[in-house]
Image (cartoon, rainbow, N blue to C red; front, top):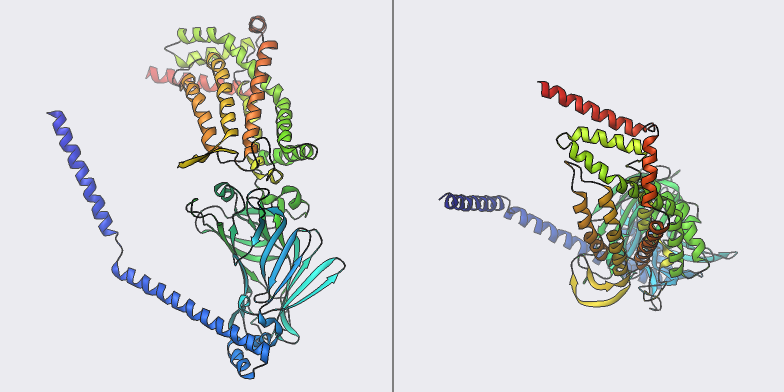
Length: 634
């Protein structure tokens, strides 16, 4: 009867909950008037955009006609729309050509219309995989835009992206200089000056005006608008997208980033560079005169990896350009090249900080140990072998810490029977048991924390490796064994279906690393369980270790399947070496009988003075015991 009543109550409860949900959905349904207003607004925006496009097309057609024939009627019409800048329509550049400049590493195409870079190709780097024949294209097919909104003295708003610049190319020594001038008269202009040096990814970019103090409204800054949809360049779009984001330097050297997601926005003051960073390539705008402020926005364009395969992110930057004595004068640079630590560091402008090497000690390990060591090794030997030797050296350097950890486990293992005896003796008094256990540790000269500290010391190196290998540009498109690109996944089997969190392929190095982790944990879990007896009121560590033996390899399989093969190779070799070191230490350096004899000898000596940590722990236990005694008296 009770069960039936319970079932009826459950049914009534579900009905009520369902009814509440329906009511909430009804109350929150969109207002038809709001929907109609939004639809009308969208139609107005679309109509305005169409009208603007037609106007621009008409202006462009008129400009070409004026440049070709000098048609005065068309010129008068342009003056009504463009004001003083109608002068630019009288120049041959209004026909809409391009100017190309290039050096050994980069090729740039600059359009007369807008005066900005419409094509930037890196000549020494290929998309997707080595031998693809497709060069990396940072800018192409209108994926990027640069515009300055001009506020004229006669209350017009003109966009430089819609106006024609006059190109003039020259050379100073080996440097190529391209001057693009948007003219309002023979000696009145806005100039973009591009300076390309030999074999350099850094391009000079000066923006200045001359004689425009009466043409433009100089009371407030002009808005520089820079946008880019970043092209996919790597084999794994999800892996590349994870490391694609906007970085910026502001407040006299502080580096920050916008973050991942939809319409993520940051506002910064005194900005000295804005970096549209991709995983292995970046486009960076730098300035000698800090921008007073900047508004930076990032949006993810990859909704479905099977469909969205061309672009990764949409980046925009809005930056005010202030006038000085009625004119613009900014000395800037474009960096268009690899997101490579050494290359970026060589410019001495903090650009290398856009590469995520980890914060605090993790970054120091990468900066002062991993990068120099791996750079030295890879300059002499193949990259795959360099990773193996690099791993061996790191593990050898850490072997004394590993030895101390295993020695501590061995000591705890020897003391386990006595600890278990104390546990049985003070079974009804957990606090007393803890106090007596600490006394035993102190008397035997054993530090229960000695096994944890070495492991904690090794953790920063492990975390640093998770930052170092995904950022190592030198691994890009470098092959080793079956992996054709150590910076991407080493696919050995292509699956005909997609597994959530895993992918549609099987990478072999993560499988090998998972197997190595399994055997390592299998070998160490027994000692850890024997060394650490179960404490009353504490989690069952033995049971947790049994679970982790299987969970850790599974995590390696799933999370590393789409990671770079270099990181998985490092983890595989690292665990193999650790297993080898552990076997050698146990066989040749740790003797349980000698450890037992040493502990017994230590017991006969005067107890060592406890450490500050042990003293505080003992004092805390004594206070807890005293409080417990007082409560019992009451």
